[in-house]
Length: 250
Ligand code: F6R
Image (cartoon, rainbow, N blue to C red; front, side, top):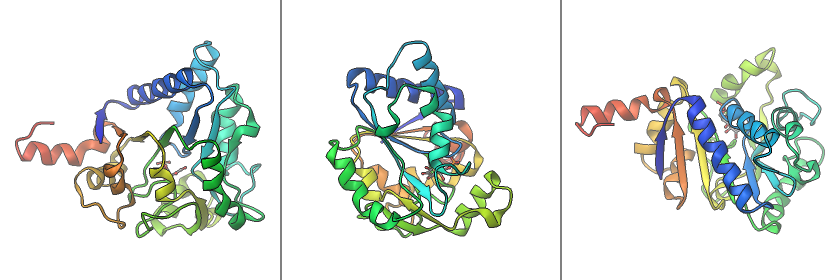
């Protein structure tokens, strides 16, 4: 696992460049997308690159990591709405090739077919990830099996509190989500994770230095053959502190 340190703009544009390179090399790439605040600048850079004619997404297939249960795609806090608003409406991707798990209707049946759908396109070439302050990836909360595939899950109190900032009232935050599993994520051929800010420092410390355990879902990424972590100074601060204390330098 590689670690790259830079400010938010720098690491966002580095990740966008990786996506652009991937799509230019293989126009029908299968991309895995995350939502949340972390990848927003990455998506803005991708949209800009498209508008400047540096990349076309017209043959790309995409799969999103997760969706809240109970929100349909027209709800402003749904992840389908987020993806349309922050990326898909600004690039030439064919929306029928964009898969965001369904959080309404027969969502359990949908979950059980999601990994097969990904496999039917040959698997994910490049997965973008964020990380929760409790170490979750997608909505795989502490304790989720490393063998998990796409499933429906309860959100932890910490995640509900973290995400409440985007809702008018914490009582509006859904308590369940449909999420790709840890195994679904580990099946991606390449993973890039972005984390910025002090609130991610402990999770990044655990990811880099802690034990590999289901109690810290992100820790499994250390076993991935092609995973790079992009962090800013704040997210890296606890790792840096320890390295300096041990005389190892940054
Ligand atoms: C979202 C997702 C989540 C977020 C994580 C961090 O699709 O999978 O795991 O990446 O909760 O969220 P932000 O980026 O808002 O801090």
